[in-house]
Length: 375
Image 1 (cartoon, helix red, strand yellow):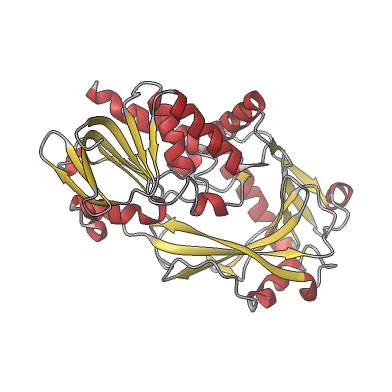
Image 2: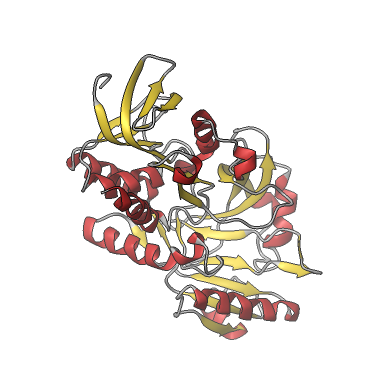
């Protein structure tokens, strides 16, 4: 590979990088996917909540919101066609007090802007019928929210890309990038090998800002610096008998969120876990702080009063790559050809966090559209 010129190089084999590889390899078989770990999906994608979102919580006009509905449909279609485990379990968004009713209406209205047309209001009695253990005054029901086996989805993306002719290379950390005005020279593992590529796509997830820096970009001036946002989950035993995802409404006062809104999430096997408890951290580290149990139970018991603090045990955590710090305004994904920065054909995907799994197929199609101008 050291003497070859590659058409397209993708950095990062998480779910988005794999989706992009699957999409582009159908047109560009001379494609290489580089992954610094021993296998694909070893970081954020392997620690995802595996939820297929319907599009309720993400602003219209953002990639996050606009891609959610088509991404939801595309994932369930692929799962049905290729026997990838998934299930439309549905989601209940519950209000436990009268002060939260307006928030339910706003959530529904925001979803409709993204094309979510199947959400219905539920009364206290209807919620009790669906989920007898849940205490709530009213709620919304989103039937198209689901869960998926992310690992098997990634395996499908990988095998499809490989069958199209793509080459996937593991244990390959990008340590240098140089642009000569025509091609990008990519240095791997500090000079162990180098190669040239016409197009370079940065899907490096938690390390996407570092790849942009290797190119010579000022990540602070560009707004590309990544902040690590860690989400921790707790398992529960005995488990409440839930068949749907249950999310409490976030309580706001004076325009600011108060406390934590801890979700009850049901996986494909029917197990329940609570979380995520989100916090900004300075390093990538996946231990779960047992002291968070006290903070979780306060939120959980507002809608599942039978759950006790003693029944909660640390389970897992994941870290998402955000491009806004704790006090920054909400931001969208960055999906951008950097031609106006002097790097045509270098496409940055930075800050791909939730709902990145749901949006993975539309993201890949959008990246393909960015390359069409070069054909």
